[in-house]
Image 1 (cartoon, rainbow, N blue to C red):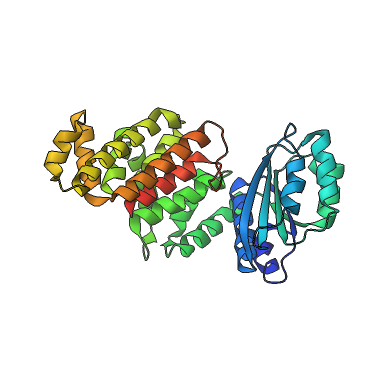
Image 2: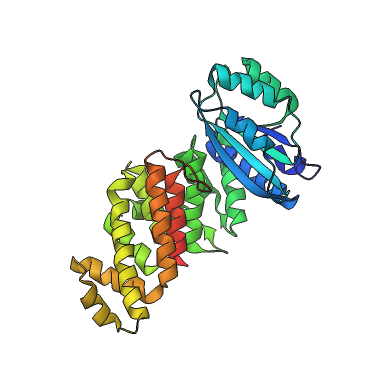
Length: 336
């Protein structure tokens, strides 16, 4: 089935085996999310994510699909293939898993498209046993309608010229296109009719942002601005570790000040006692400590540590593999 047919297919009995493939990463992520939501609605309370490659220990897949929950609950197992070529052992295991009865398990297998994929024996076995979801790129002529639908989901409408500009600038990259929708939503909120000038101004505005702007937006709770800055940093291919340490330093400084304030010390005295330098960080620490609790700052630091791991290629349970998505989550969390 095509991605656009998935919502209707999920209204019936949920298949225990799903195979998601295609050339559009955003739609693949959203397809997996839709299946997860339906699985949870039907009693799957546990989730296990496996990232596999040709050199991976493929016995873990069988173990995950056969391991019973301590409480007998149903579970979701997600297998994300790093490559359409899983190796000899991987191909053998994927062929075997297609024949296995999946009792109490919903298995979601995601693999990026390759022109040789459908000719692989393991793929044919899986496709015969699974519900296959194909996530093809949205053609350029359909992008304005796609943007219109995405904006409508956020309570926004748009003039035809605004839709045309968005489509022109985001053709071939739905991840960027979706982020443009989020930027417009964060900037204008619901009920706005997006005009061509709004799109142009948004892009021009982003082009002027840097890491210092990002830090200011994060500590002040301006989530919309933080997301726009992140989009600019990503477009310029900034290295995440190069600026994530600065975010963490600001959060640690704010946590120290907040802890002293919780102990009954005034903010000004806490800032003096915490000995924070330079002055710009001291000012941001005071601002963040005034509007965030110690618990929230601790949670933000834990998320920042996870983002650092993801940006260096490590897998973190229950986190997205794209560190930029998690950075946007961090900014939104701090803005609330």
